[in-house]
Length: 87
Image 1 (tube, helix red, strand yellow):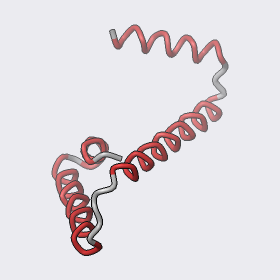
Image 2 (cartoon, helix red, strand yellow; image 1 turned 60 degrees about the horizontal axis):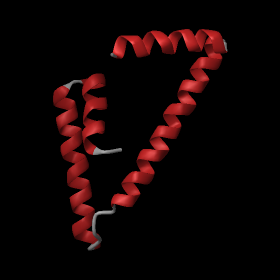
Image 3 (cartoon, helix red, strand yellow; image 1 turned 180 degrees about the vertical axis):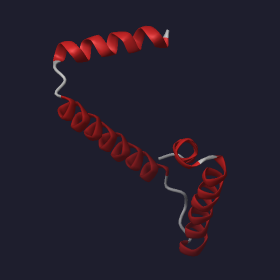
């Protein structure tokens, strides 16, 4: 997960101060590992982590849909309302 998305997620849950602290720590860990292990920053690994996070989110949505017993018509109606409110 990118640092910005991580910041936004934490800021929504715990507040801006906690998000700043967590983001600073995350960056410090990345830099520390780069220095101590003498390895370059691995952008491909970040992409893999983003993909795993996305897949986990999709599984969570699917579990919620199953828990609510939503059928196709209800989903279509919900998504049509959501797409109208975005524009």
